[in-house]
Image (cartoon, rainbow, N blue to C red; front, side, top):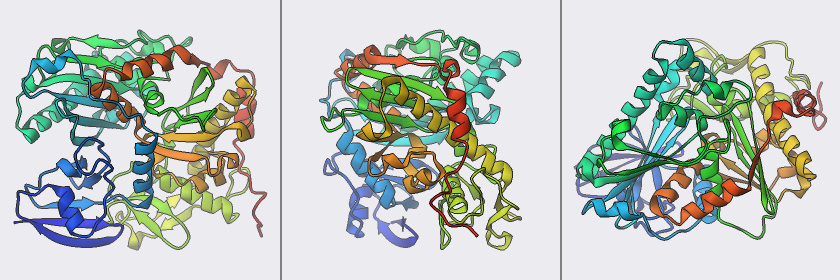
Length: 506
C-alpha cells in the first residue's frame, strides 16, 4: 500500500492506494471533485495536480507507484483550468504521417520559457495527454533574463554551445523520464513540437542570438524550423518530425504565436488584448483583420529577480498577501516573495498610504518577521523593490497604451483581456489594477488562460489542422518597436506613478 498525502488549500488528508490505482479516481474517492471535462479519459489535460518533487501531472493518467504528496488546484487555479478549456480550440486528432513510424507512437510538445520548461507527453493513437511535466530552466544560472543569456553567448568562449547543451540535456532528461514512465522505447517518440521565445529557440538551434539584442533587432530566422534529430542529439526516433513554431519578431516569439493561435474564435470579442507578463511583457492587440504586437522590457521583478527577498514560484514563496493572512506555496515557512505575492504586497502598501504616488516610503516594510520565516532574517519589501515594480508595471501599461493609440481604440473598446503565462495564473487582478499594472477599465474583462504557449504547442502536436490557425496569426501579425515610438517615453514616465486618489491617507 502507498500513502497519498493530499493538500487542499491548507487542509491535509492522507489516504492509501493499493499500487495499481490511477490518481484521479483516488482523489475523487477521497471526496475531491477535480475538474476533468473529458471525464477522465486523458484527452483534455485539465485534471492537473502538483506532485511534490515531480511537478505538474495529469491525474487521470498518473499511476500511483510510491508514496506521494499531492497539491490540488486552489479556487483561482481551478477557474483558470475551466477558462482554458472553454476558450481553447477543440481540434481532432491528426498527427500526420510521422505516426506511422511506430506501432506505439508518442509525441512531446515542449514550451521553452526563460524561467520554466513545460513538457506534454501525448499518445498519438488516442490523443491522450499521458503526462505533463514542468521543470525550471537550468539556464537560469547564466542569468534570469534573455539579455543576460545573450550576453553570455557573446562574451564567453563557446558560450552559445554551453547554453545550448544545457537545454538539450534537460530535454533529454525529460524524454527519458517519459520513456520510462510509459514503458516505451526512444524510437516510439516520433514527433516533437517546440514553442518558446525567440531567444530560447535561437539558442536551442545553435543560432547566434546576439543580433536580437542589437538594433535593429533582426532574428536569424522567424519562420518555423524543421530540425534533424541528429542535429539536436535528442533521444527519440531518428526520423522523428521535430519542428519549432514560427516567431513574429526578435521579442515576440513562437510562445505568443502559439498562444494567440490556441484561442477559439468567439464573436463576443471583436477587440481583445493578449498579455504574457513576464521578464519580457509580450502584448498583442487583436482586432478585426489585424494583430498588432509589441514587446516591452518589464524586467525580472515579477519572476522574483532584483527583489531583495524575491524568489520564483516554488515551495516557500509567498504567493498571496493581505493584512489578515499570507499564502505560502507548499504550506511551509516562507523564504521569500514570488511575483504574485509581490503585487499583492505593493497593492496593500499603496492602498494603506504607506507608499505614496511617487512610490516613496519611509522604511522597509516587514512582510514576515524572522521568527516566523524560513530564513534567519525578516522578509521585507525595500524602496528598491518598489522601484523595480514601478519600472515593470510602467513598461506593461505604456505598451498597452501605445497599441491602443495605434488603432484608435480606448480601454473601454476592449472586449476581453487574456492573461497568459505562468505569472498570469496566480496574479490577483484587483491588486494588479491597484498598482496600475492593469487598467481599471478592464475590470470583469480579464480571463486567465495559463500556459497558452504550452497549449499551442500541444495543439500543433496533436493536429495538423492547427497549422491553419498559426498561418492566420502570422499573416495578420504586425510588430511595432516601442523604442521607435515617440510617445512611449512619455507614457512610460506617466505610468511610473501610483494612483492614490481613491484612498484616504493620514
